[in-house]
Image 1 (tube, rainbow, N blue to C red):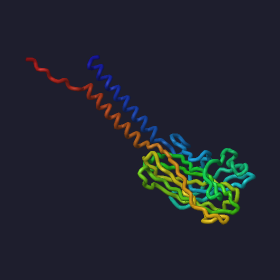
Image 2 (image 1 turned 45 degrees about the vertical axis):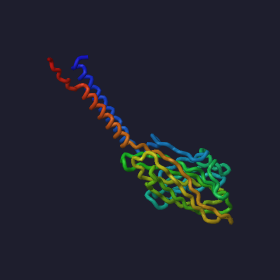
Image 3 (image 1 turned 90 degrees about the vertical axis):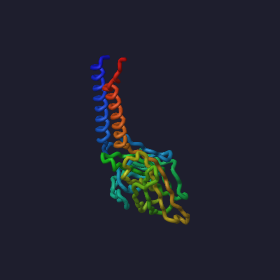
Image 4 (image 1 turned 180 degrees about the vertical axis):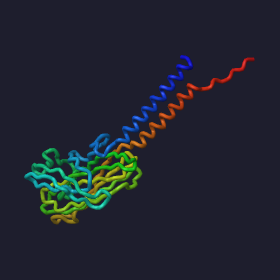
Length: 259
């Protein structure tokens, strides 16, 4: 290949690398909170599943063991993500299924034979702001005692180094015998960590129906795509590749002396 041909080839390679970098950066930067799971991971800790609720701190209205109804707005506790959501409603079949028959409560943990707590589930939500990004957390809670119960739930999220990123408290009020609630919140400030550890501690009354009940903690791992770090790595690699190609093409040949 002639020197002119090599130069043209080098220019084409640099242009292609630059275009790839721009396209990857623009695509990642347009990650939207309403993407509904694009690039997200839902991690389930038990054998069952619960419906993915709208993002905010709340405890959805309980459903009785029979009958049907629609969700309403619930109020969240303290923390950076207070507020309410429209909760899923539907038909309950024997106290095991809610939200139109699409959610089956199974597996999970029985808290002293008084409460049934499903596994903690999580969904990562990326954001255009590289310092933001959030995780929606939720679990289902069923009262299998003979008393109406109030309970507190503390959610918190830590990075891989164990530093707390955000926390929120949710109040479960007047959970009737046989009723089921989906308790949910949204924690913010994931940033560019990618993987984060999420936790939820349920604190029921110390004694229910004469039985001592202790707090229970469930854990989950959530993933939020770190678009800034990823595109930055692509930019560094692309710049190095372009520098290497240009250096190879335009390298100055060493002078050869003739004796």
